[in-house]
Length: 253
Image (cartoon, rainbow, N blue to C red; front, top):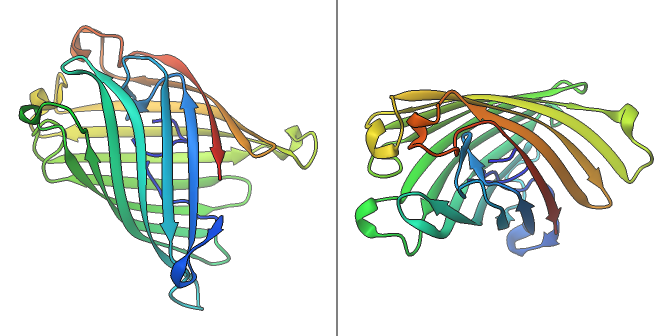
C-alpha cells in the first residue's frame, strides 16, 4: 500500500476531528491512488483505486501519557487475476500510546481483511496481529512493524511481515504555512508458510518503496516508487510485482 494509505494500513488516525462519545473522537479519510499496492504487490492489476476509511478513538486512559483504543473501517476496490474485480473491506481495532512528549509511539492491534463477493472456496479472508514501535528524532522519524497471521490470504498458513520505515520532513521546501513536504522510505519482507496458496514463487520476498508527500491546503499529495524481489514469472506472469510509480491524493476529514 502507499505509505499515506491505510491498509491494505491500516493504522487508526491520531488527530481528533469530530467529537465522539466517552471523550473520544471520529475521523474519516478518502484516498484516490493510481494503484493499490500492498507489500509491493498490486491489488488492482495496476489500475486506480478509491479508498475510504472511518475511525473512532477513545480519549486517553491515563494522564501520565497518551493511551487510547481505536476501531476503524477501511475499503478499496481490488482486481485479482484469480477472481477478477471486487472489493476489500478491513476491520481494525487496537491500542496506541504516545509518550516522552509524543516522541515514542507504540501500537498493538488486529486487522481483519475481508473480500465480500469473492468465491468462498478461495478463502481470501484472514487476520493480522500487528505490533508497531516508532521514535520521532525531530529531523527524521523511524518505526518498525511486525504483522503475524496464523492463517493468511488464500489459506496459506502462518505468515510474517516485517517492515521498517523512515520519514524526513523537508521544512526548507515550504512556501508558506499551507505547504509542507516530507520524503520517506520503507523496506519489508513477507514470509508465508504455504507460499503457493498465497501466489508466491517461494516462502519469502522483499519489497521496498520511496516517495515524496506534499501537504497543501488540507490535501496530501504523494508520488512513490515501489518494487519487489519477485520477477515476472514468479508473479503469475503478470506485472503486478514489478517496479512502478504510484500517484495518490488523500483528504482527511
